[in-house]
Image (spheres, rainbow, N blue to C red):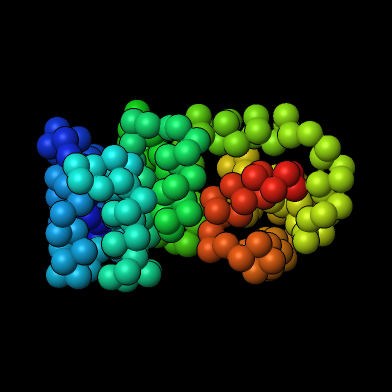
Length: 211
């Protein structure tokens, strides 16, 4: 996997490179300390995954994400930030980021998150997942909201498990379906909600009160 790192702190960039450099699955092909010129840099170096800070000099993480995806919509953007405000998370996910993790993430978890977004999945730090779940638990008029959802009861249950961070295999075991059937349900959830990934689906369903 070809990795590009965008963070305004050199020590963070060096730390991320140190974590990844001993793993043959990863190659750091580019880095930048600001959002300026990252579109051109991505066009020249063609990264598969971009590790992107949520706040950069001269641009937000969301703006930087949109610039990168304008170059190549197949780039998997993983936000790696010290900030976890709901507004910031939502802005980045709506801009197309496939994951959002906090910088105190352990090495193995970071690598797993990179592999997840590269493979078309999503990745969210537990602290952010907990915020989403708390919003789901406290949402009023759950029953009427569910009835307004375009999703079936099975799809709603799968979406709850997605929001909790479960993998497709774990979801399959909990809802007693095959992994392929779960994957089909997830694709149908994306279509019905008009979203592109797991994180966007969970955030949209949470905002609409469907979970």
